[in-house]
Image (tube, rainbow, N blue to C red; front, side):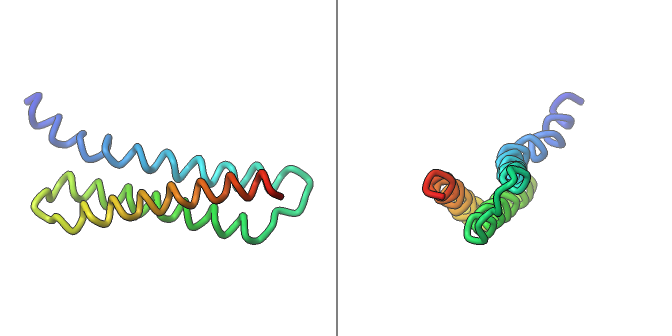
Length: 98
């Protein structure tokens, strides 16, 4: 019974890591919008693209955990996670510059 529970919980745990990063990107977008200043459009776009990339990574790793024979899901996971990290890095630079 314990092994069956582990097989059901593992995909959810794997998807929660990039999902948390997506939520953090959206929280930054919300906080910068409430600061009283007009948030630059470029910062909004970069944060939204980063959050979208992290969400795509979360969905891909979830389904890869279920269907581990689909290697293209792992490729999508890795590429979208790297794109999300790049978006986060660019947004931090934009926050410092602006």
